[in-house]
Amino acid sequence: MGAVTSLAEAIKAEQKVKVKWGFIWALWCAILWGLWYIPGTVVWYAPPYGEWAPPLFPGTDPLGEFLAAAVVITTFNAVWVLIFLLVWVGVLGKFGELIRTLRNFTNISKWFWLGAICGGPIAIFGSFMAMGIIGGAFAAAAALVYPVVGATIAKLWYKERISPRTYLGIVLIILGGILIFNPLDMIAQLQNPAAPEVLFLGYLGGAMAFLGWGIEGAVAARALDVSDPDIGITVRFMGEVFYWIIIICPLTAALFGWNIYPLLSATANADAQVWLVAAGITFAFCYVSWYKSFPLIGVGRGQAIAALYGPLAVIFVILFLGGVPAWWLILGVIVAVIGTFIMYYWEGAVVEETTREM
Image (cartoon, rainbow, N blue to C red; front, side, top):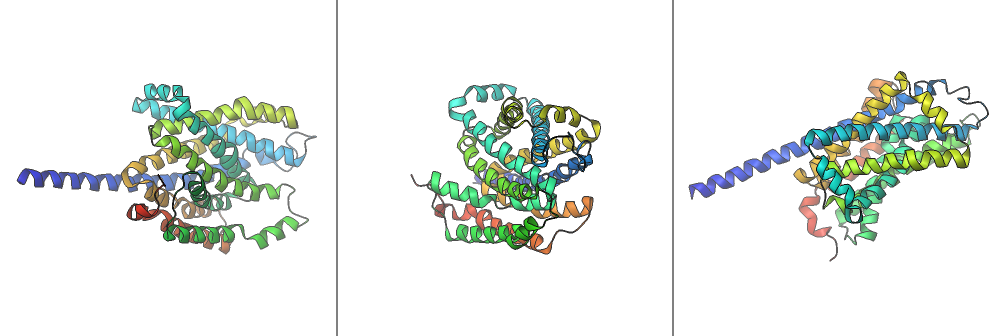
């Protein structure tokens, strides 16, 4: 009897340790994700982007010039993230598993490569556009709406039954999104004759962020059930780097005449790269921390804690970049985070209400 009691106590103690580390990993994700918006914003002020007033390459239109810059910055971000993830996989001794996962394209890798399209050329590209025009606080806040997209896809694709609690969370997140985007102020800004010609791309980028990450989460979930999270993240960024370097950069240069390659060369300077390296390492390990938390405290709680990146990003922007965001953006972040907690945090307690139909 004593042995049984000791075993039960040992299991209980181990579970407490798992929960503790699950929250630590999720909190690290929130901190690193929030920090990512600092170098992601500052790089727009580094050479050659710090000289934004005169055309970087005379003869190009402002729209094409800005989009080319966003393509280049996002490409470098993806490359640095992949480098740090490959180092992480090497430290863990999982290169063999990485090769096996890459070979299993039909059942596993294809989902990560599909998720890379949503997360890279849509979400991350959109975030950099928002950071470059409107700022890091808005870019971070706008992405908080992504759970609504994920829940909608889960309902349509996985046939998940959504509980009343989840519906309440969705309503609050949508309300938070309305406050963050503030349509009245957005329309006034866009109609201002003194506004930059590319201003609309900042708001579009914010929408791309929550759409892309919402879709990516639903797509990647198809493979995460049968693969190692550390390997899955690495495969996903291998796909993104492939898309940028092999497909998107050459295609956009050929179709639109954007000065991609001169801008890539101009961005390969120490002032810009130090911020891109900082963006790469924070983003790489925020992803690692996020997925590390899932098996320890569950996907729902992991996503809820990670959503704290929103208010943390606003705090970091105020501390490191100066200026206080508009009150409606701060209120929108608070409402969206509350909605995310209602939607996800207690998921484990109501799993019978939100299960997939068999």
